[in-house]
Length: 512
Image 1 (cartoon, one colour):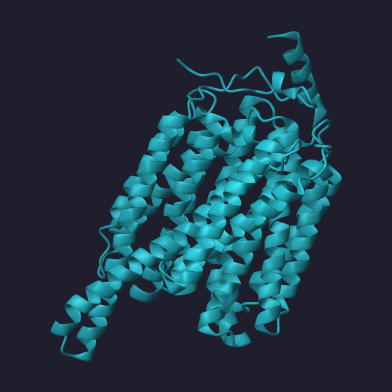
Image 2: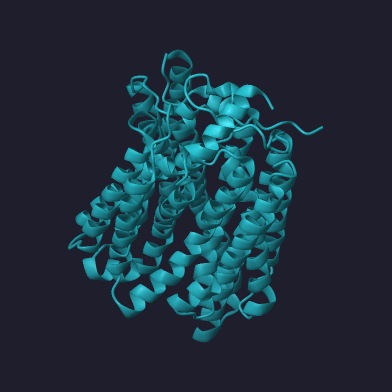
């Protein structure tokens, strides 16, 4: 080991004695953000009825959050690099709690949409700060594997916990509690972070903010996410949908050109042009497309076709959480320092694809135990195993001053993937359902037969879309094997700090 690396290691071991305590509060904040993505979906029908929100406007409860969160993530990541990650994290938590209180107290649709947009804004500040704090605090490879295992399990499994909690709160209390529940999470995490976390030294980026980059990236990402939500409701040929996609392409190309020229870019291109990181961002986005759509279809299948209550639906997702926990904390953590990341991620995505493949066999009379249970276990196991090294590798080898924006790219690929997945898979399912019903409704003479055809059509639509999701997961595995060439992490090198940190950062060693 070189003298520099030894010094860096000594600093890392003694520099942040509170890192494991800090992980508790970072994980709590991450759980809150992930919970929020699904908990509101369960409460949406009740909130819509209470506030008199029309069916046409209903999607804005989800879209307002997604647009603000997805559009501002890169900006939030760079703010964390400028202000300091601890400050960004605490401010993000307090803002998120305030926005949640506003949502819970909403008396009309405007107040609801505004509160959701505000949650998205503070979420975009909070999420990259949380991930980059982990990236700079856990510098020993084995400790890092353990920390990211826990973080990955929460990032993956939190959404399913949201279904259970959303069901319990909506059924036994009131939909408003799906917002109020964020407040204790945020307050505990903010207080804990304030007293426990110390801002890592030398990690600040003192360069002035790249305003053209902020505007171009935010508008480009917002146009992209909005284009997909419009496609879902109004169709792919709709003039506004097409206009949004064209505007997004122009803005994002202009953003890349700007970033290549300015002295202190919002997103230094070195962060994404690195072969490993580029492959990680792309494969995560593609895998999330498959995941998000499937969450939605399974929820509808269990509630509409099988007649499950919201709580029962939530509990039906538990095997997926169990699979994710095992994949992330047992398989991923134990093997991450022993085998190259692609040997965990590639097979992980393929195992998830096998789980998805089982779900293409769904019919109206399918039993939970024979198809859904094994499918969910495989899906969770595969995703947990793949997510864990992905989260860690995406921020490994990045200069500390860029870790906020590198973390933001992980979240951006997930948000954009989620928006694309929901719109794309919903559209595939809807058109398959329509054509199935059109072909079979003629032979249905009684009302009960017509209802049966309608249900069969829905299930046919879901399975068609799930076939597409299987393809997406196989594609994610191909991307990983093609691009991610990082081998086993060098367990001796740890992250340094400051301007010349690149020499000391744990750069993955390519395994031959």
